[in-house]
Length: 313
Image (cartoon, rainbow, N blue to C red; front, side, top):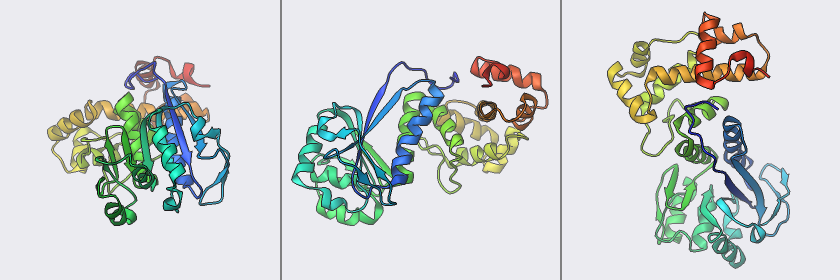
């Protein structure tokens, strides 16, 4: 595991509560970052199980059928319960669902409403006095129906142990932000690189209080120039920010200098190429911006504790 990802011996258990016509996109954006985190950590730090209210299979809005491990009432609990109701959420807000969610709130440390999940949490009375968001198309109806909830038109909201996000992409941002808080910003950068996640028009660092468009622009330039690295001055000009100011912003947002972050991105890219085993170590070095294979090997060992040859499968 890279030394810039915070090490921990903790494990987390996540329940994923699905409803009919749930969004596969939202489900993937919730689970895949956890799967990627396990790979980066080198262990199963995150475990998840699929749940439904009655233990019966459910079908996504795109026609895929998922069979749950168990019904919600039989789940022992854990660190997080994620609700994915998507379309038709109002119909699921029955007295039985409300009771099941209130009981689950006593067993799971954090409840997360994705897409229309906030509607179900609000119907169960769990969001009274909390900040929350929902899919923007439902914001007006949500605010009028649940005046006790402090509704905000935001991509995602975290208020104590009740979190919410309005859709599939915002679910990704919420989960990756949680991983970054737990394991360091490096985790979010590694996962973003894996998924080729890049938003030219939105902040790249999706961590509360750390969104910075200059840092985002510089990161985009770094990722676009792995094989032929740019100088920090060039990055600053591309980002429209003085170099000294950019360095301050990187330290504030990421806890590292632009040079250190750039190096980590390049070596992370190299590690992925080595893991694929398709090209030679010399080629990996070149694609990662190293004309000298020996210099590449030294940098790789410093970062990951293994030589490129030892790392290859």
